[in-house]
Image (cartoon, rainbow, N blue to C red; front, side):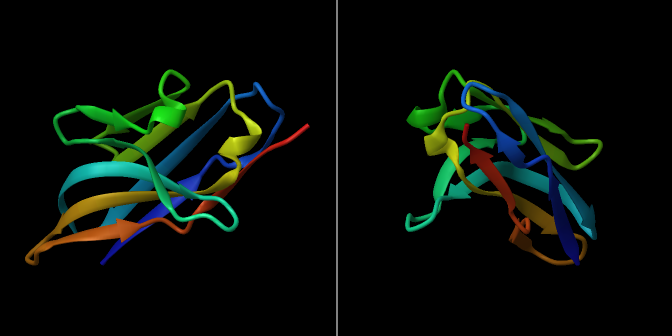
Length: 120
């Protein structure tokens, strides 16, 4: 019904930058909160940042001042600009969206994940 496709991950040196994108498609009536989670090897998945439909944002303390989340409602897309990347940012990054599906209810949908590796 709804698919999320992520792009933008890769290998970057410490101090570098990346931008992640996640686009939703399908039977979408509206999208509420959009967000990014990450999971490093051997660790639990954690919230990185999210953005409400009205534009208010929330960030994990570890990324404040370095990451910026934004959304384009016309394109059903969420972005995350990441700068001053550190090795601790290495993880698989997942987008998530709260979607009201046409003629149905509200469900959370997840992207397939994109690998971000910060290493020299």
